[in-house]
Structure formats: structure tokens, C-alpha cells
Length: 73
Image (cartoon, rainbow, N blue to C red; front, side, top):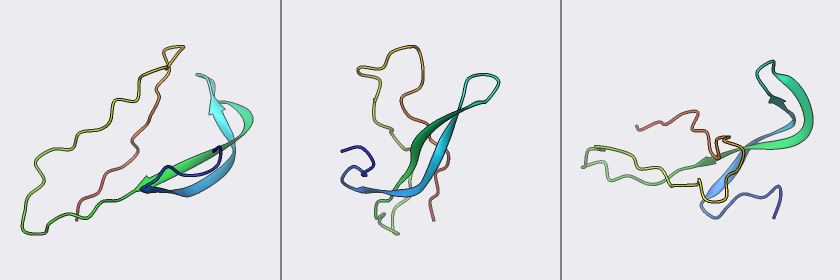
């Protein structure tokens, strides 16, 4: 469903437009910023993070997913 988060995630922010193109032209389109968290065993050390392959069906050479931040603590 458009405007809803996938299971295991939530919408962190909703914005009324997206900056589109190299000149950051504004396109009026509702966009969402999603967040997801997972519990970690404090007795273990994180060695690496594997992101999902979300390229299936992607067209136009654009990125299908952007990772803005990752926090472990």
C-alpha cells in the first residue's frame, strides 16, 4: 500500500516534495523516509552489515534504495 511501511519498518518522516535531477528541481510528490531497527546481542560484535538487493525491476539507472545512516550502539 502506498504511504505505509513494510513489515518491520516504520515511516520516520513524510515530505511534500522530492528534489529531482542535477539542478535539484522540485517535484511535488509525497515521499517518505523509512526507519528499521533490529535487536542486537550486546555480548557480540557487529562485523558487517548486508543490505538487501532491491535492484529487481529498477529502470532508468536510478538508485532503488538510499542508506542515509546506520547506527550501532
